Length: 337
Image 1: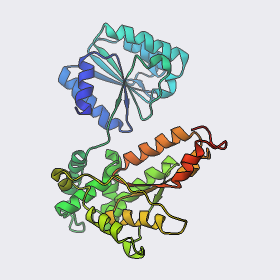
Image 2 (image 1 turned 30 degrees about the vertical axis):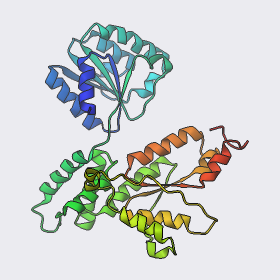
Image 3 (image 1 turned 120 degrees about the horizontal axis):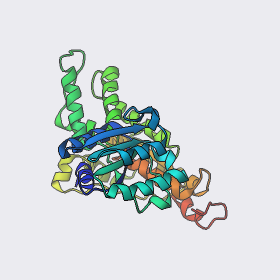
Image 4 (image 1 turned 135 degrees about the vertical axis):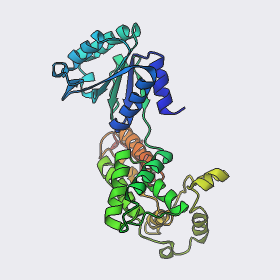
């Protein structure tokens, strides 16, 4: 079931409070607006800067929730970036009161935020929906719209073979619609064509902002690696294993490899050459650093690292110093994560 269908079903089923986790306000708003038009409902948006539908008197969160209670039926209220206020005792209590009031009406409150922040009191009252990033099909429609908008410009080459188009879309996978649109335009401005390296550079920005993973620009080749003929053959055979044809044929995507050896034997070099061969972003996670408690809570940072890697997938996740993570679970120097 798609997220849009799930959202429509929740509104039709009169769920009082829905919490949507997404960075893409525009996409979510458009989806909610379509549901409202389809079901004959009105959509009202609240922000801390403008209040409810531009009513500055409702900028205060409590005033906004009071507005919801007194508003007419058949309305969906979208409260943007409401998460900083949920921790307030008065706001939490008002939301719980709101649940019982909305159950007797045809009104729905949607909390829209990039972060999930719920106090224990509301965990049983709110339904959480993770709004997925654009699919390959969504990105393909966006790419096609950009191609059509610049097709008459002879200075730009937007011709793509089916394989090149698929590689461009795969490289943009994990970006929001705005990020993808921006980086497609940037690629055309800088390279006069759709360039995968430029698109992967946008993913590098995402990694930098996470503060946990390191992004490596892979420029090494297997010619730099001595020996390892079986591994080289295995990797080369799976160069196209992430494309759509491989999926249709039923070929499984490679899951991972474990490299063991003394320092300086080429483990790191091999990780870099794999990313270069497959033309995928290479993310380095220093496991020893996380479990040593240097960057804070081990569990939280590990979850954040995995979530970031998933957001830019497909990618190569390089787990470095893996053995230190196991040692850290019994080390007095660890943070207990």
